Image (cartoon, rainbow, N blue to C red):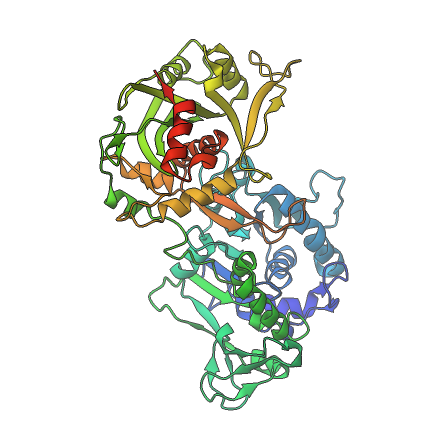
Length: 599
């Protein structure tokens, strides 16, 4: 029995989880039939090992694919099964809102979990036992859960929202897939609304597969075509007056009322004939959403909003079109181009600007467990010149008078040859996020602690850098202390955006916002500098506590210390009020004569 056949006979939708409770009808979402059926072991689907679904929302995926497969597995074709979500909180939400109602509303499923109870040890919210198998639900953030057991069936939900690394043990996706290695007839289901193009896992696996699209016939000429947003026709000023779809072959207008028959007559067609027969990949956008779900008018309104709302533009691309947000060449800097461009002055030597040596130095410090990384920069008004990158190796849990902390104090006191005198670092910003009590202990041990700002990066505050705050952590034990330690919050979201805008400036022309580099900096240096991308927050919970939809920064590679230290340098520049004196050379020279550290 195929899954679609099983669902039409045995599956019931609960009023608690569906807007259309009652018996499941595959004819309601006919595009899901093949996706469901290729998860069985019957011919012609017996060779398929991995099923990839890149999708928009409101297409019935969770109920039609995930829950139908789990119900079929529990009652008809049992086997060890695991379902993984982006987090433990997310997977428990699915269990509560989708899985439990599916079990209770479908008698054939419920009777196979005869001892189902939240209080029993074998059948809980995240573990279900049934004859011939079991179901385990876990989050992608816990490595021990992902590596706990071998399974035949693996469901990976919203993979584009999985962490890049789970507790230092590597990709959670690969950890989970490794659990299926002992089963030759395994089935792996990967589904997700995509996020951004560069980091999208679901987009990458979609292109590994045979890239299937759902082709539907025009009710006028019978020509089979994909539904695309470009053919949606409407009046922007009066969308409620009606939205139609223009046939790409005959040009006739198609009303949405024809969509039901079009979907029933539709068929999946592979477009990549060089793919392995073991991987089937499917793409569905929200234009296919059945009548009564998401309408073409809803999609049209979202499209109009996306044209004027920069934040919502990516939401529309991800949630409605089921496509990753494209990162255009002018969105983010290229490490390859920066490396190819290179630098013009030696590292470690104060560079000159307009024939004069620079005499205002800042430093940003990032603390890791086995090293401290320092980036020293020189400034002329808004122009930033990277002077040198220093790595101080050593156990950062050591005391302040031991390496690498004592080496960091030496960097703070380092002298550079200026135009007329030696120049020292005017201000240093050090991140306290990793081991704050060690950072504060080092700070208190300095001869001149005013040269150093202890900072903490936060996503967003009302200013670029906050007023001083007190952190209640002992500099000796790490426990709370009676007297707090002073630190500053740094708006890393704003600063990263500004740095990337500066890096995108054409290197052939020096502007007032340019960032320049020394000769011979490694490719790794530039890759760390360009190591993050700005993406929308999780679409399932896109609002923060203030109710404002926001972006977040996501690393596209493991190491990004250079970007962090550059952020601390720019934050230091703002913290010194340098921005108030950067309008012209006269004001800047006066500022540097007061704030500069001439030794």
